[in-house]
Length: 269
Image (tube, rainbow, N blue to C red; front, side, top):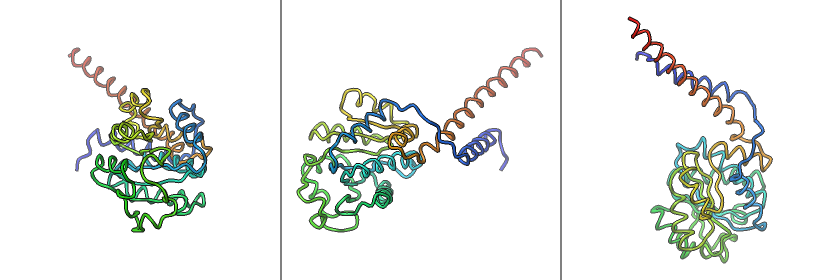
């Protein structure tokens, strides 16, 4: 295969990212109002509050979603909130289960009493509406096949009325459905950790109060890690993300200079 000019651009980008990731630099960030709002919301809930965390994303979003999810789970487990994990997108199912187990182990939380994972439910709108009527009927068994009645943490839990809130970890439009059907119909507070590309989509929901709080993108993950005092993948990726942006801007500038110089030479002939 002949290597074209654009291939060198991608190779250069890869080199920039690799070098930046090898440098263990975690900058001090100015925390945005949005990230602080989420932090204060979770902190304001009484210890042991019951939260439903929905892993509404695909595997392709992992580089961005994983730091967000880990920051959220660290804060929630540290506050000793009781967590119910689910997934409304199939690819998020195993990812969510793995991340919850990883963080639970870090905070010595026990499955069944501190957290449970109910797994995947297809037809997301129907699932959101069904959980508003009955969580046990929507998920009669957990992800591992244990019956709802055998999970002590879920004793007495019927529907959204027994939850302190829902937090969707999403790379797409699922947050909108949680707001429309979970918040709109059943009144459950909805918050979100979302990919950077979705932040502007949900800003109006946040401004109107339909979303309780929202954290977005790698920058949001890094800010949240700073708030909870646990620097992680988000903070580490800041240098790589900044370097990539500078690299792309530099390519645009160089491309424009080459274009205009070439055009001037063409006119001079």
